[in-house]
Image: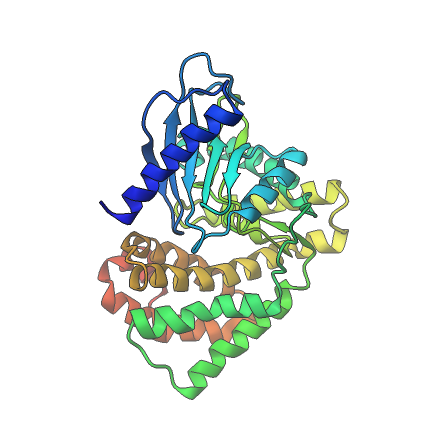
Length: 361
């Protein structure tokens, strides 16, 4: 039996024991079934409950989480979940948590992710609801019992460095010369210095269509928030509107950006000058995020054997080039990506030309 299977059996035994002692109103009615894993070491299972169990919402199951404590710290998840719920954000209720074992029981939000529900006819209403939910997320400026890490200049620069350390040398097999390396380093500093000047708020860090759910009552549910930080106000909006897993017309994205800036202004979170600067903030934050994500997707493949994320690199690279092209301060980075790194990538992945071919010099 594998270690993973042993942990799943131990998770089930723990859940049955805990519920029997602490929540006799919630009666297990079967074995765990796998729901999903994610880019981390966490795994999610569904635990069916007997008919008549009193649940937080009208589902006949709970979600059981295996988060090995030597690899995952579940304390931030629990603290952040409680804080977000206090700010009106629909996140799963934490029923039970054993930090030593790395096990949790959560409210079951079901299987209706936002991503499959997004169509040309539904996206405007669903993104409007998602942006309204994001306003509640941003309002969670403190987490009792846990200090949100700062998304500071060093961290932003280090994240962008994943492209330099993983995508370029280890995925593409390229070596940059001294001048090219300097272009990257200067761009990283320029971008980090700019985005750290934005208002600092609660940042989910992965607020996109595969971490948002459509609940039975029509509300937007939010999951996968355990890596939250305090950082730039546009970060989560960039995650939502320039999603690696779904693409919308640029004019539509620009309209949503202005809509969200107006909502922030109405709440007194932006000045008139900030509202005018908001589209630029959004582009620069998107550039930081997408430099990082290209590196992360390469690392997930090379280090962790999770190769499916490589299929999403073309969309992310396309976003990145479009975000930096308009800004003279990032011209050297744009040219390096377009004329040196992009051709090497297309040579390795010719099929990506469908998405990226229009950038080829």
